[in-house]
Image (tube, rainbow, N blue to C red; front, side):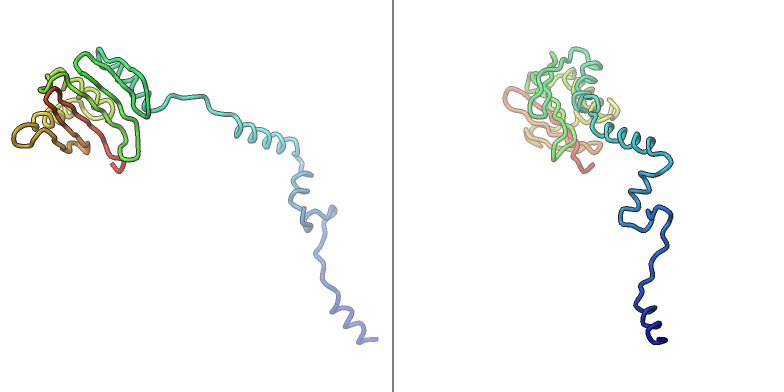
Length: 191
């Protein structure tokens, strides 16, 4: 008999202490505990509000590039915003044959491209380019005027008709043909 008692005690598995509901030790204990909490309405309301917040869409906001185009239009006299196609916003100004704002891409953050009416750009054209670059790249206008002038004036017999320079961490590329000159100012994405 004594031997049977020891085998009976050794065979019995110890059980965990159960609470009054048995909710802490069961597999569904946490869910039951939440559902039987003192504030079930508050928890359900919070869950519904979180779900609705996830489903509602934020109001439509203009793209950063569109904001820049509007800023350019408001701050440069005579500039008007044209069509947008393939991440390029076409602008127009009386001093330029063509102006465009390139939106962020893989290789650059923003780009300003301008083509002059003549082979030798006028100071008014360079002024428009400098104003636009100052707004787009948030740099002082005097610095942009100096950089654009340096790039345009470098074209000639010594450096040729295709010049690439860097000024204030901006890539400036100036080129000219027999009839016109152009400048492209951009900042690469790694800067």
